[in-house]
Image (cartoon, rainbow, N blue to C red; front, side, top):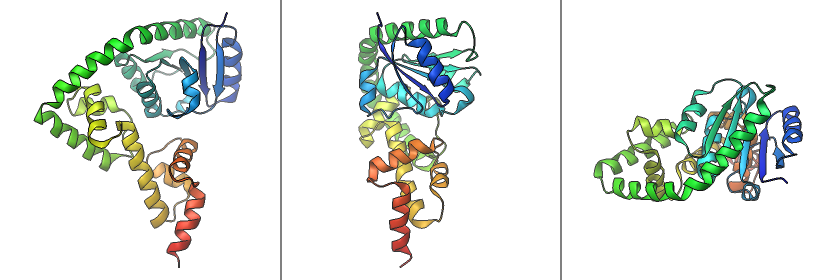
Length: 256
């Protein structure tokens, strides 16, 4: 009997098809070539996400953001050691990294074990960890020094939005607890850090559309979105216009 539904993500259709077939005997598999947005309905249907990130086509930041915000197990398969993912997996309850060639004969066993272990650990520990994190945040926020650091982190985001790719590294750089930083930024801005950075990027995209002659792909890369399809989708969700449609409207108005 199939024990859970997993979301399988791979940017390479060949791996997507092969892995879906391999895993389908043990899991209900939903397969796609792009990461889901955390607000998509599809993520409410899954218990685990397996990302086959061969050739590093999916940005680390997007993977880390997904794991921390959804709070469900995310397993990343990569045949080259990725220090960002590996280090973050060591700190995260929800992220697991498997370093194996994608064609390794023992891969299916490794994936199955990682999925099972991640699910068990995540489900058993999430409530307990949430309580600990809440107490740590309330204690930290009483400190004036901590609040000043949060203000500096927010300023850093507003200036360096295109370069931020690992929130754990930012927390370490400012010497604050990651989860406390995450909650404090939400408290001050009304948005979790990744959503706040995303909103800055989308605002900057609008400015570039209006005041430059950059093409849509160039605009996405300029603000730090490596996944152009994902960036275009975010922009359209925000403004109910594609980037091309927005360019047509705003640049036409500016030329009059």
